[in-house]
Length: 127
Image (tube, rainbow, N blue to C red):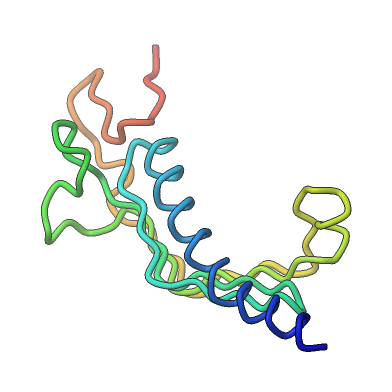
C-alpha cells in the first residue's frame, strides 16, 4: 500500500515535468515555432492529463525564440484535457475516452503576404 502511494506521488510530480519539457522541445522543433505550456496536471489513477495555457508563437529565424516579447501566439488553448484509457498502457499508444479544448484561439496564421511569401515557417507554398 505504501509503495503504491509513493509511486503515484512520484508520477504526479515527475510526469508533468517530463510532459511539459518534451512537449515544448519537440513541438518547437517539429513546428518551427515556439511552443510553450503554462502547466501540466496528471492524475495517474485515472490517466487524466490536462495542459494549461498551451501557446504556439512565431519565432525569429536567427534566435529560434518568439519574434518579440509582445508576440501574439498564433495558436492558444487555455485548457487541453485528455482522459486516456488503461488500454493506452497495454497498447503503448494513446487511447482516449475524452478530449476537450477550452478557449482555443487562432490569430494571424495566414495573413496575406507578397507572392511566394510563407507566413508560417512550416507552411507549404503553392506552385
